[in-house]
Length: 247
Ligand SMILES: NC(=O)c1ccc[n+]([C@@H]2O[C@H](COP(=O)([O-])OP(=O)(O)OC[C@H]3O[C@@H](n4cnc5c(N)ncnc54)[C@H](O)[C@@H]3O)[C@@H](O)[C@H]2O)c1
Image (cartoon, rainbow, N blue to C red; front, side, top):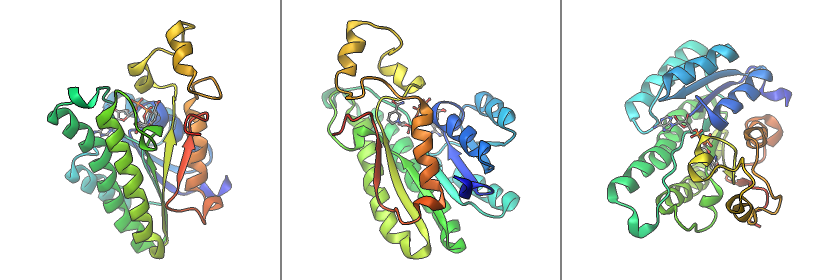
């Protein structure tokens, strides 16, 4: 995917998990990578190992977006790719979900994505080019049992992606969503430790036709494709990386 070489790529939630792996994939391909997160020690360590930039950034705070986007444009002159990857999980049924829990997850997972598309989309529209990749979930494609607020936030990401794609297409900006299933990160271990061979692990994996969880690279490769010029006619679409759960 040589066309991501020299592109300026902003990845939120880049201190660990999928965001950190995507940072490494883009770095290896010669992109200029900026990782942002609220986990500063982990984020700075990853950035040091990749020889890229780390910035403190709470995606639910509009003033943080202002600062981060201004700093990147001052330093690098442009933003070619935004990966709205930062997210939090909340496992609860609807009847057990408090207003505070619902608001908190919507602030990070949905408001954070909206702010990112608005702030970075403004820069990209001026440039006349850019690719925004919003990380939703398979929980943004179907109803889920026991993760009500998370599912609501990920459906919001999918809907906003499609509306933003219609709004920004004529300005040269593409917007797509990626929908991971079970990906082997800290977030998944909140749901269950898939590294054993227990009956529960086997039961949970029954819903996955490929019968396994995925490595973060398997999502990252799709993100890199959507960032690249090779996906130049794709916008407003959902790309599912779930081992076949939603099939
Ligand atoms: N792991 C899975 O199975 C799975 C499945 C579907 C979707 N996803 C989505 O993939 C994305 C990446 O998750 P992951 O699996 O790497 O999990 P993770 O928990 O390892 O990483 C999420 C990152 O987001 C950061 N973050 C949280 N709140 C933030 C905030 N307010 N501002 C900035 N950063 C913040 C965290 O500090 C962390 O570094 C998330 O959007 C998640 O919802 C994950």
